Amino acid sequence: MRSVIALVTLCLFTMTPMAPGALPPADEPAKDATKNDAVEKAPTPAENQREQRRRAGRERQGQASGPAAGSTLPAGLHVHNTNGSKVTLASLTSGQPTVIVGGCLTCPKYLRAYPDVEAIAKDYGPKGVQFFYLYKTLAHPENHGLIQPYTIEERLAQVDMARKRLGTQVPWLTDTMENEIWAALGNRPNPHLVLDGEGKVITYAQWAEGPALRQALVEAIGPVDSPTTSQSLNLPQIEYVTTPASGVVEPIRRTDILTPIVARPNLESVKETPFYVKLRAEASSELVQGGSGELYIGFRLDPVHEVHWNNLVEPVAWEVTLPEGTTMSPAKANAPKVEAATDIDPREFMVNVTDWSPGTSIPITVKYFACSEKEGWCKPVTQTYDLVLQRDRSAGSVHGRSFRRGGGQEAGRGGRGGRGGRAGRQGGQMSNLAQMDRNGDGKISKDEAPQRMQQRFDRFDTNGDGFIDSDEMEALRNRMQRGRGGRPMPREL
Image (cartoon, rainbow, N blue to C red; front, side):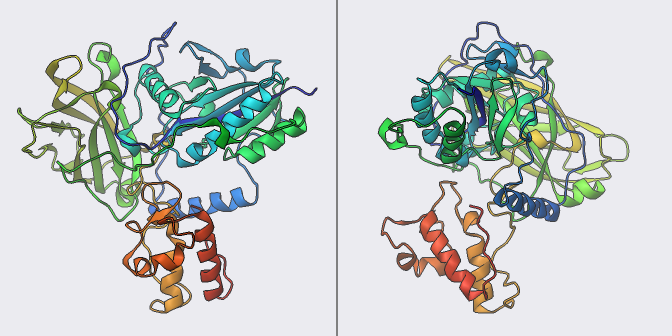
């Protein structure tokens, strides 16, 4: 029998708001509490869109950018084992058929794939194949209020959430805070990799899909007599939610695409006071290109710590220390006062920056009051960060702000069929079906559909279930393709 290792990466999913559990204990707590910051200039929104289209084309042609067949992964890669201890990946996989499946709870593609992986594990476990999930940096932070962790303990807590909420039987590994395995697998949110017992790559795919993974194991290990179906496992039904419940503070909405930049926390005091609140910073294309433009600053409560804002005291306040020659308006601000005594909504700000040099840090200090109902305390917290004008590739992308499904910014611009022509308008609308799917569940509800589509929603919803699903989307694409003279419609959803 040819021994194999199948490796797939994993990250946190979208789900309804919940009270997350406390930090799980680790036999040997890891010390790597730093974040890997890529030092490079951020692309423009147009470049982002072109890259998304190029990636979609490579995926359709099977031209994956990860490890090549016959190659081996870099030596010395580390991962945190099921107890949270930091070990080498090779120590877990060497000489043994192993499947490591990665992803996260904010990645809809992973959520659709993991039931099949569970079924495959049930079939190939008795054949001596070892299965793991690999939890990695979040693909789409803010889905379900989940945000990028700053420490390995926080990432392990998210793994514990995933284990409980998904009902997984496959044990979990956790990527390091340097995101070693994520980088080794091409920085993909949900790839799969199949290795032989010597660590050589048999096959790699950018997206983990059950049929492809099963076929790889059939070829390497052999078929099973009666394959298990995912439906027979009675796994929990996942409800996709793009954002947590809100309503106390009006969120900032953007029509353009922003780029996440480095927001490096000062972790020196993290053991004394965790970062209950975490900062995300995103820059406009003008800012990343020329050093002058808009900057998004958002402070979000980390659900791992189960805290809320105390609105009976002074609201969240922040202030920056600017380098010489750089201006920011405003350079300090307070969140708005709200009537509710407590809430968990983010506190968001848009500011204008001029003459910010790439690589130059801007220190920012935030002050807030956090309260824990579970532990019975409220306390003031002051914490600092360094903002750096360089793209953070490991930050993930946020739906509706730094990412739009389908890669476009706006719909309904017409196209070659004519700016105002019917085919052009409908083609533009249908090419953005993925963008309409705001909650990332792979289908469109009537509320998500634009008004023009709502008028004929029942006609498009051929199975009458109240949604336009992938098959119905495909039928619509084919119809619109004929209306566009045979030009292909985008397939990415």
